[in-house]
Image (cartoon, rainbow, N blue to C red):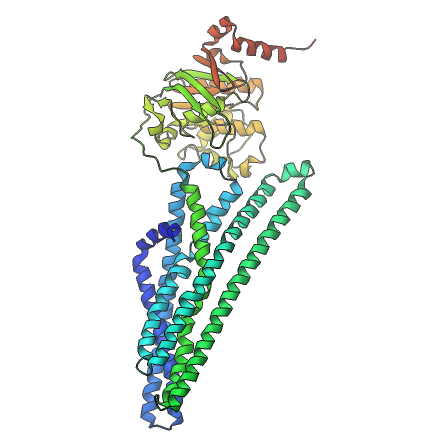
Length: 569
């Protein structure tokens, strides 16, 4: 039950609708019992040929009860569903608010398909917490207590039988099935997460699977996972149906018992025969409120495991507290003995890194692939928390990432493009950008043949690698910033276009702090500082001239690059 405490806290915000739904639910249940009890009494009374006035009063009461039941049932459905959907909206908002600060580190722990299953499926399951878990037992108890109180005026024995039925159908049977349900609910959710993961990977990797002729194997794996999921659902469904069948059987046995005991009481003169049909109809009707208790265990375990799976994601770390951070000028960065390891990684990516990046200067970070360049840039961008890093003289752990990103222009190795037009994707950087400014930005990066209304597919599937990079840089050119963090921004464009783009970026970032991660060493003469990395360590720092004169690691990299691109013949 403790897993659902967070959901219960959100329910408190809708206490008014919840109270009204319970009130009208009890009223609908009580009037239904009264309606059918009066019907039984009316039939028995009519058989005795009483005065027509007596029957007229009973018929009028039935009509009033019918109208009251209909209105109260409508009101109960209205308030209960309004509360349910509002609670569901609050759950989604609350979960996303807690999930957002965990990105992007959360993707290293959970596969995207599994995370999607939790965000969509598990959150959706929690809509049943109020309507199928909390609400039914409250209404059941109140309606049963009112009914037992009413029946006690006719026979304490039959009232006791109804109380026994309440205990069996409302608590013992659902409790027993709830205990057994624990074995099924979690396995169903795990299988659903596995299925979502397999489907996501199939769609995202369809092209590669097709090229390498592994599509059939992947489809077989998907079908196997789907089969296991269907089997778990069948077993869970059979368990739920068994619960409902047993609950219904006990309900009918109790009603037969009421009939038998009532007949005995009538025969022994302890009960007037005219009330026997009333008591039987009361028994049959009141147990309609026990029907939701048969499916309660399934929904309870479903909701409990859904809440637990969501909590596993958002309780990975406590929500951090930040001090006010306003980046109104070019920032500096400094690391002191910085060591960083990705979550669950076997070894650190950065080891004892100590560097200083001055404010308003242009710094390049170079080195072989896997040397830690991009990781250092991501730490500067506050994509992962770490010790040993200060930003503008402030401990990075206390810097609000939102405050940093608001004043930063960033180009990463992988940039996302949304389905829509070029205009839509450019406006992400600056919503106030005019069409003229966007066309100029496209011209500045060499996309002169593109139009703002040209269609962009999801993830930019209809763009080449170079076009994607240039579009990302065009976004940067639309926005003023005091910090530029660029990770291989021109790795997929030709040398001439690269030179043109970097010149424009350097001019635009003249007074800003600029950090450029690059494999290419050409054009770095314009940088104020070059940091050379190897296997997570900083091995050299200096200007282009200083490093070349030192003839160390940077000099060797430069010689290798020149030999590779030297003309043949």
